[in-house]
Length: 118
Length: 110
Image (cartoon, rainbow over all chains, first blue to last red; front, side):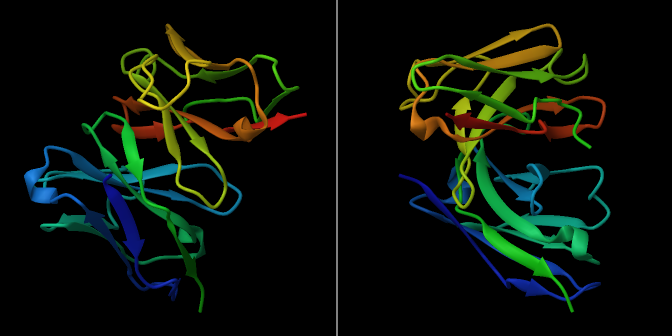
């Protein structure tokens, strides 16, 4: 069973860059035809799509975050970078496998809490 | 502000049927597939319905997805205590463009 695990700092200072890694077990990102996405949930709010990357590095970003987001892919992991963070970027960040850029997120990681605070 | 609108809450007693609506527009639900996710706080969201009405393996057939025009719905029949969770619809929106989630519905089993 494929598993995804998010990792990274739980505390980021305002104006700095949030960096998270999603490690994929039992599969190689490069050998898969799937896509890999990032979704977040601010405290007390709903889910928000951040962006998606294909196994060959084609990216799709949420227009509201596009100027600050970079998603990259490696053999068994993909990485999210979100620059110039503010308190509004605090939340739980999930990585998930997607069957197509417009498709379903069928496997999710457990999520990691990121707090933006000085 | 999400472009997919759901009722904030829904409830029912064990065994009852609960239906959650998801209202969108021609640029999202009207022209793309709808997905439904179940989310228990502190856990990974789970895909319940894909391509409007398809269930992944392991999802019971008492969960049914449907779509008509620019709206979709998720019906949960034979309500159980383990169904108590947050439910989100989702779809791609051609006008953004991007993937959008609904506002979320909290289901309570009374």
